[in-house]
Length: 294
Image (cartoon, rainbow, N blue to C red; front, side):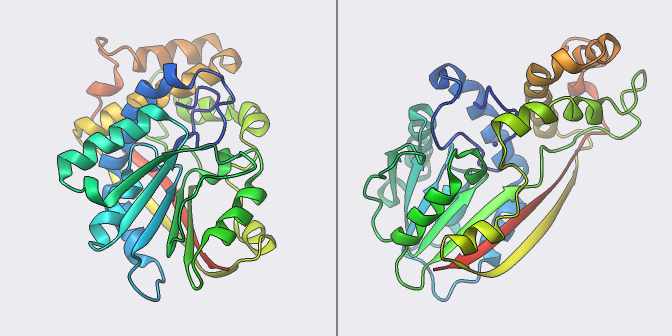
């Protein structure tokens, strides 16, 4: 969803709450690159989710919670040409990049950025939005129930809250790869399970019950299967490289020496077995969206 404490990210994944690792600015640059690739590779799927939202009318005021570098923000601006978006994130670097992109696209007048910790007791004034969008951000919060209640109080009457989450970290390699260590990617993911259970316990959650407990009615839920064949896609190669590089940082202590060596071969950009040279990469994951009203 950068997350030095967890390699998971989403379409606009980022740490929207407190910086548990204590080194957010140091990690902003690396995460920003992943978020940009995520936005590029998954743009079509993100647009389809925005188009699916069961809105009663076109929203004019939108809040993007945990906006990252703006994948959701710009998808929403494109879909709703009369809307203004308040983009909220804890990362000053991500918000700076988002503003630069808004200027480059000529929509700076329709975007307001707010730096805020969504785990704080009190949020800044975010207006009274018709739509609140939270993509790959809720699961990073220490107390998501409190945040959900804050959203309920924030929304305009009849407003919609859209929670979008990835089922898990995307997979990129075929099951038989790499040739010298088949199934390496799944073992690397399994090696991070304990870490995620401790640091990101809400990852992969069913957000229906927490939304109901916070006073929402879930009007609709949809799971989108993502399966993008990479062929020789440079973006997917770089996306896979950056993603598995982050996985390595968490999984390394639990991997066998043979698996770690094979993973390092994949991450050796100049080597013959580099991920960037492979022609069989794909992006495989699932996204679920919950659409709820107070």
